[in-house]
Amino acid sequence: MCAQQKTSADTRTEFDAIIVGAGFAGMYMLYRLRGLGFSARVIERGTGVGGTWYWNRYPGARCDVESLDYQYSFSEDLQREWNWTERYATQPEILKYANHVAERFDLFSDMQFETTVTSAHFNEGTNRWAVGTDRGDRFTAKYCIMATGCLSASRIPDFKGVDTFKGDSYHTGRWPHEGVDFSGKRVGIIGTGSSAIQSIPLIASQAAHLTVFQRTPNFSLPANNERLTPDKVREYKENFAELKRLARESPAGIAIEVNEQSALEAAPEEREQAFEQGWNQGGFHLLQAYADLLATTEANETVAEFVRGKVRKVVQNPEVAETLAPKDHPLGTKRICIDTYYFETYNRDNVTLVNIKNNPVTEILPNGLRLEDGAEYELDAIVYATGFDAMTGALLSMDIRGREGERLGDVWAAGPRTYLGLSVAGFPNMFMITGPGSPSVLSNMIISIEQHVDWIADCMSYMREHENATIEADTGAQDAWVDHVNEVASLTLYPLANSWYLGANIPGKPRVFMPYVGGVGAYRIKCDEVAANGYEGFALDSKVMEPAR
Ligand code: FAD
Ligand code: N01
Image 1 (cartoon, protein in one colour):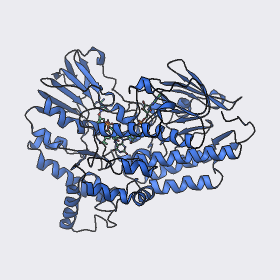
Image 2 (cartoon, rainbow, N blue to C red):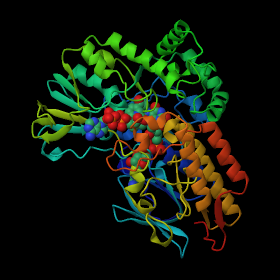
Image 3 (spheres, rainbow, N blue to C red):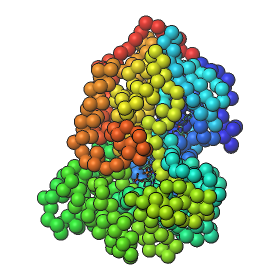
């Protein structure tokens, strides 16, 4: 079925809730609201569901949280009937899953595709949101729920001459649906984050030549991907409820055990052995080896040096190996990458690494690009693996206005301020799913999405029951939460890296650590307490009651 046919035929313009975005967050939000008898419409820019997995179709795109963990937990039937085939599912398989969920729960009938929400204005007279789109729609709703994604606003840096390039250019986060054939082409890729690290081995195996332009080397661990055996899948399914409970209570939304010992207390040989074991297990297992690897620079340096040693062993050219070995930030303070033969790729004859740390790209030319020192590279295709305007980009690309017409962009001029990452003072009845100030991108995001959606759904039910017209974060509670988010971040190693967590990838973006590092389990307890205490830190107004439509 094509997306056009799936798009809702419903012509209503008034709803209890408008949900912006049809990724995993928007899909589950719709499912929950439907179940509670609320009317809702999902508005999505793309032609289909899946969000991240709809847009990021570059070669090698996969999850890096294991497939069995990276799935919804809300339906026992869903988990029983869906079978993941690989330890780390490919983008097509995850997108298939998203479509399966949408079909299975009949979500398409309340979704509108190929439509971008451009504005959302709160009307203080009616206590309703007026939501406008690029197609000229005007919806009104009591609630406006932003399921717009933390990594959905893809970004090509402001290079001079970007539009003059005569070859083909691509951003990993906006990859053509029909795929790309790089055979016989001289390809340049800018960036060495997760998207680049996943795609470089595959592009290199196809292109005539691949030139990688690296500003910052990244720590990357081997995925050791494999097909899932029926036994492994069966065991997971049988223990599903318990594993999900553990995930919800865990720091990162994944049920894993971490060695309680300090890396610094272990003898060097013992440590090497533990690291080797973690490395061989693949994925994030290396980080479980000791409790303090991400807590102190000294402990971190032990594991960072172990990984640099692996790079030096794999990459045959010592100079290239040194350029690839990260030394300017502690391991884990930029998002760790999970790869399949990434470092090995630099041993190929058709791959060149160019260090642009102190010699940046100054101009994209009609036939390639130029660096600051004047060196020019002739290219037939350019891949921008340059990431996203993370966490705030999608929200701030809309004209969102709260009380007294105040713009979210102005309120957040010095960085995002939220209460619990769910709500913003001055913007009543607007919720964000995995917004800044919540664990979001530091966690298994499906676990965090489900927690936020369930909290919002419960809140809306409570308001209906108590005949509340609006809910709005108190400025004081918001200030205290922002202080807490900043304080816990300052106690970690995270601020030591120029990461997108801090907005450092975007020139001029306020440097604020956006996600909450306190952990998924502790954060959930806090959110539950807030709700149990009658939505502590929020003002609930019952003066004007709009009938549910
Ligand atoms: P998204 O999936 O980003 O969906 C948001 C949707 O909102 C998009 O479809 C977008 O088009 C739409 N939208 C935004 N603004 C508007 C607007 N104004 N109007 C209309 N529509 C709009 N997380 C993990 O936990 N594990 C992983 O392994 C993992 N792998 C990832 C791999 C990649 C390549 C990337 C980029 C991210 C990955 N993530 C991973 C994070 C991932 O974004 C989340 O796991 C999850 O998919 C987010 O779901 P979402 O619905 O919140 O947002
Ligand atoms: O983006 P990134 P991404 N000149 O921002 C470089 C998730 N994800 O799309 O580090 C030159 O990480 C930039 O350099 P620097 C995951 O959460 C998960 O790869 O800023 N270079 C960097 O190397 C991830 O973290 C998976 O110095 C420039 C790169 O471009 C997030 O999405 C897969 C530049 C951008 O890396 C984003 O990943 C993919 C410039 N002007 C994504 N501007 C999984 O594996 C930027 N760069 C699950």
